[in-house]
Amino acid sequence: MKRAEEPFPSEWLELGVQAEPERVEAIAEVLGHYGYQGGVVIEESYRPAPDGLGLERDPSGPVLVRTYLPHNAAGEQGLRDIQSALDRLGQPFPPQVRILAAQDWAHFWKVHFDVLRVGRRFVIVPAWRDFEPQPGDLVITLDPGLAFGTGLHPTTQLCLKGLERYVQPGGSVLDLGTGSGILAIAAARLGGGSVLSLDNDPLAVIAARENVELNQVESQVQVEQGTLEAGRGRFELILANILAPTIQELAPLLAASLPTGGILIASGIFEEQAEAVCHTLDQHGLRLLETLTQDGWVALVFC
Image 1 (tube, rainbow, N blue to C red):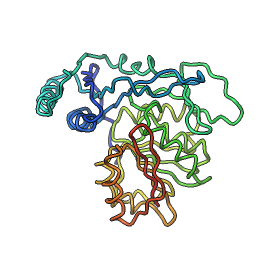
Image 2: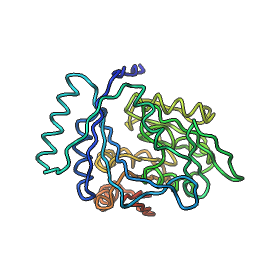
Image 3: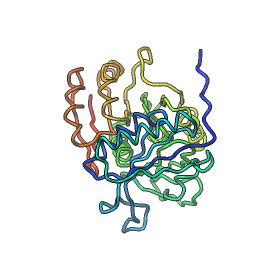
Image 4: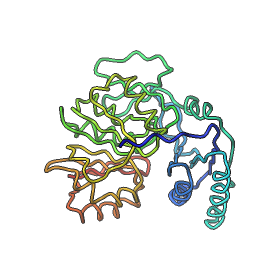
């Protein structure tokens, strides 16, 4: 029986922590432990690209780690737990907290989200902006809604670049932790035959379904709430843009879900975590093909 989608609160606590580079991982783990559905946003600074087409990372800018909690008694307790954990870490910058209505959260990204070119062909276009595509552009029209996933983050960009290399026309694809659905839509744009898009967060499922319809790829992409589990079948390409510990935890299922010749693109990994992730996946019979890096993040390609 299909599980009903969970209702979500009308108000949220947005918690933002300014992090020094060497503390980002530890702070993200704390916020992910207590935040809603384990969701964490690592928000790096961006500036206009020199060519005027979209944005590029600003290495001199601050890094903010954000999470969200429901504005209720449980969320207030989570906020106190986060503060205690940050105190134990010796975090020098106090967290910033504000209350957001659901509609405010839905429009949060619009302030920062501009047209973005990624890789050789992809152009990510906010649904509220006009854009005239050039010959050869693969346009993904996106509205993150109540989910996270604009394509700005290096982990998403690394996956998009990997998709350009490894999607097989007509092949089966699994997008694990789909967020706004951007990678699933990209796989369909590249000719993926059937794409299963999974996320534990009901808000992400809503946003991904809306974006799939917006990009008119419903015939190729199926969005479901859930995670990888036995019996899902095998996929010629698996995208796992999630956290490194979760990739390691799911390693047996990821390996079992790849047929001979199948490809796994594992992202959401800090450079210092890559060796441990490689070791775990190697123990389950997967072979490293390629390492893609950007701004301290890594995507690992296995077969």
